[in-house]
Length: 123
Image 1: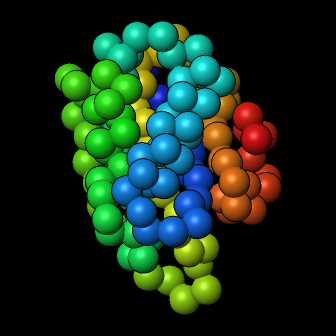
Image 2: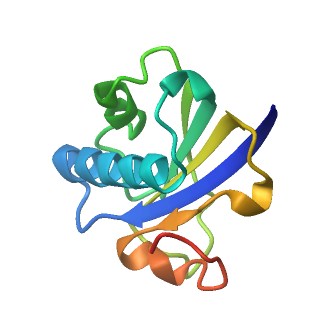
């Protein structure tokens, strides 16, 4: 079994905890569904980032509320690149799987679909 990375991103309209948590939950649920991940034990870790305009809550809280209580989670802030997408939440999941990296489905939702139009995903 190998460890593979799965990327995802989404956006919110405002820096409000309920929006950040709902959008992160939606993103995680879609990544899990698209990649056939049924057991949280298959998730090695998750790194969440937000743009600097999102600071009202930790997106990892959405993962905890989903039941990822034993998964190591980390939140960080994206570097503030001029002209980058605002109010964006990103995640990198590391998962144990028999699938190849090419078989991983990366998920970009809402305005974040514009970030990686080159990636075949569950958009």
